[in-house]
Image 1: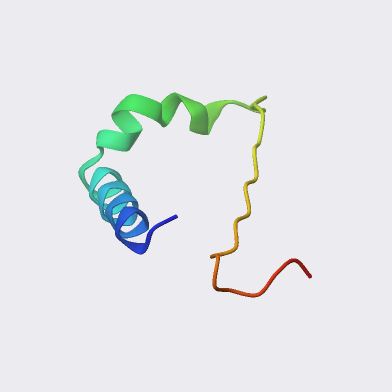
Image 2: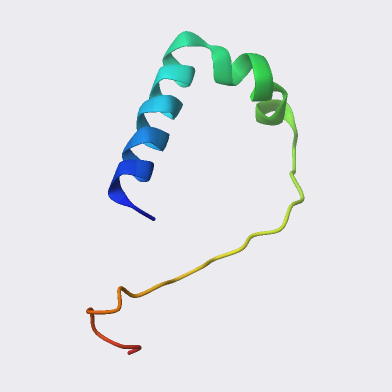
Amino acid sequence: MDDGVRGLFDETLRRDLASGAWDARFGHLRTQPTYECSLVIVRATPPDGPGPR
């Protein structure tokens, strides 16, 4: 993920948490005893970086 994209995500999440916007939209998830979902992990190495380990 590009550093600019990550920075924008961080700023947006921090702002939404501070303002209560996140809780207004997703706060119900905090009271659920469990949450079922899928998880996708993507790992990429820059073309000029080291290869797989």
